[in-house]
Image 1: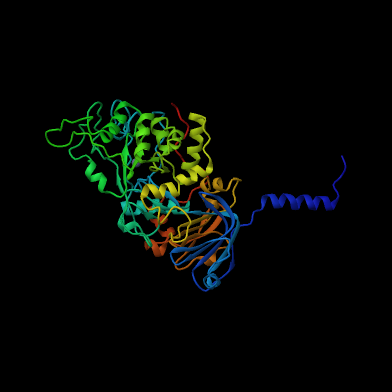
Image 2: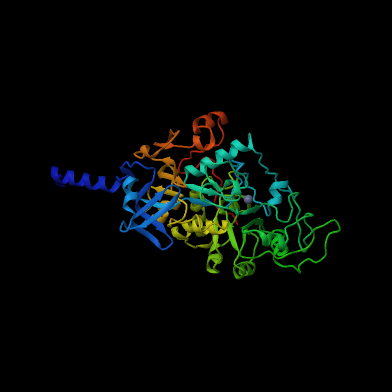
Amino acid sequence: MGTFSPIFAILLSLLSLSQIAHAACKLIHKGKSSDLLLKGTLLTSAGAIHDTHVLVQSSKITYVGNGSNMPHRAALHAQVLECYDSVISPGFINTHEHIEYSTINPLPDIGERDNHRHDWRKGLRNHTLRQAEVNGTMANATMWGELRHIFSGTTSIIGGGMVSGLARNLDFVAGLEEGLVAPAAVWDTFPLEDVAGILRNGNCDYGLFPIDRETAGKYNRYLAHVSEGIDAEARNEFKCLSNSTFDTIPLPAGGGLSTDIIAPNLALVHALGLSELDFDLVAARGAMVVWSPRSNVFLYGKTLDVSYLLAAGITVALGTDWLPSGSATMAREAVCAVDVMKRSYNVTLEPKTLWEMATINAAKVAGLEMHVGSIEVGKVADIVVIGRGKEKDPFAQAVYAATENIELVVRGGKVLVAGPGLEELAEGDCELVLFGNVRKTVCVRSEIGVSFRDLRNNLGGVYPAVLPGVPKDEPTCVPTR
Ligand SMILES: [Zn+2]
């Protein structure tokens, strides 16, 4: 064994430093306007494009390219960010939330797996009742849930509840926020009006006023919970919504008939009970699917083989479902998705596929792909910048990102979260918030009328909105069947 020469030792330490120290996104020019010019690796469906310039003026994206032909006068006054180790992604779009359940802890795992949602919702067929209650006011819980998603890079949500500001609420006209116009998506938890826990097999005798073809056909997008379960009763729901001759005998008081709503404006939420033949019909009709693998696995022990849907050409979007049985963030949903597909079906989902499920596919599900879901000129500036973590693939860097690694969250050109070194981007009433070891600037008070710190103090000890890499008490994603 010889000894290292001092020069060799210095070279070695420099080399190892360069391997671990990645440059964070930094503000290199403080402009006079609040326009933003981002430079970094842009994620697109065509691939990751290095050294891309993205110009944001007021709420819109006005330039995307390599810097040539950029409107230089505008760029002159913009805040210029160099983010060469980071990726620039459209903000994530969560197509499935029940956002008011955001101040409660995930359900404990009692080892029980159900066959249909009514098993746990109503404690039917000898299953344990697992109903969760909204904790505190609906408005506070919704605000808290939206903060959790904003902090983790999600700028739009379809979640059945809304507050003004924070994330765009794509299922409320009033929640679309700047730059977006009606129609909003229509979101339905009980399209068959089976909220009371009605299970059927062989007929469609559910509630009195189930969805019908004419009504569903009027919606720009209709997102309906269908077949959340793995048994014949779950599949029966799809039969009642995909075949108008399946049940032609009405109930005396109303309802009881099957219908056919499978069309390009429909997104089936869960669709866990469908067969491959059913998905062939979904594909042939151009309908879409919202996939929530963690919640499926936790409640039912399995999720669907999404590779079959993708091969059939079905547009699939990711959604977290809800905090009690689902993922706390879109990144954790993506982590679960890739993991369960490997375990259950030996299929490797590519990071880019998952990233599309969280961005452009989700925008299509919402019917707002002209405005959100990608970084293109004319779209609203919903942007998340993600710093280098342990992932090498740029799409993995984005879609699996720990909340700590999110450097910038922008909705409609407005900076909501800015990482270290970007404090000067923050405008208005902002505050410093610790994300693990990372101190970020959070600007939400002008959105919701209360600071994050005050809201946190008011809520006192509820499930956190600032989460570590693996959130506390996260529901399992390990399939059991
Ligand atoms: Zn749901």
